[in-house]
Length: 348
Image 1 (cartoon, helix red, strand yellow):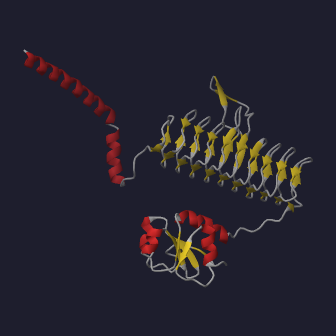
Image 2 (cartoon, one colour):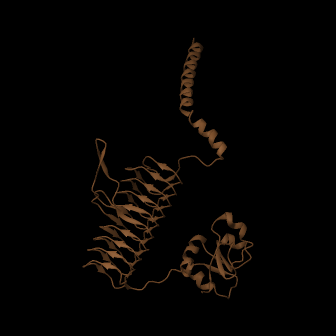
Image 3 (tube, helix red, strand yellow):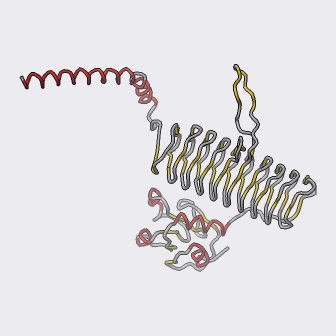
């Protein structure tokens, strides 16, 4: 447990009110108890502020003025919550060393501070740097490198020639460096293309559970520094993702697509291959990106949710759109003809 003053120091906030008892954890406004801290980062939850039982609440200056309880005043409550969360981390600590069931090929370089879990397999030429953690049943392929402070949860698979930067977190079930989907068609028969590139991942990247990142066909698939990937994302071969871009779950990126820096790709987005997306682009959920995006901003496709009965009526009209467009085009041509005739008659 920590004091409220220690928490406020960690998040760069100022305490308003008095709280002597220690803080035991964090919780939502609705669920917080008298020994927990909460936060208000979304206006739709402001209605819970007056009734919260929290020991203190992380608030902006404006919200703190109307709150009667104890507050920790910060500029960005959500960021402060993120910083405070590390004070209550419950993940078990890791002990340096190699579990006796691990299979380590001759010549593998492992820093003494690294923690290698049960039944891990590490192939020849791999390099495991300082303070790396590899969870049980992990696999590290030949010549792969894991940078300082990397943390691989149980059952992460790294194929050969995968290079990972510092402080990278990879969740269970992720597969990095699998063969990309590359085939040439000869008279209806698919011929496999060898995927001879690798994968290069920058520093401070996080990769979610069951996410897959394919190796390059020729050059490497590349993720920049600070990239954040949610669960169950597919990154195809030779994709390049710029620094600090984030993607939500179930995004699919086709081969050789380039995505810029500081982009946000919402859940279920699909992108065709061989296109480019510039920096500072936000793509909303379930959008299908079929062409390059050259201007920063927000992009969407698809239709918003409707009741089933409304959707059926709309779907019926969608089928008639082409015919309707042609009829309007014909009417515009006829109107232009009539207008020219009237103008001619007036001149006469």
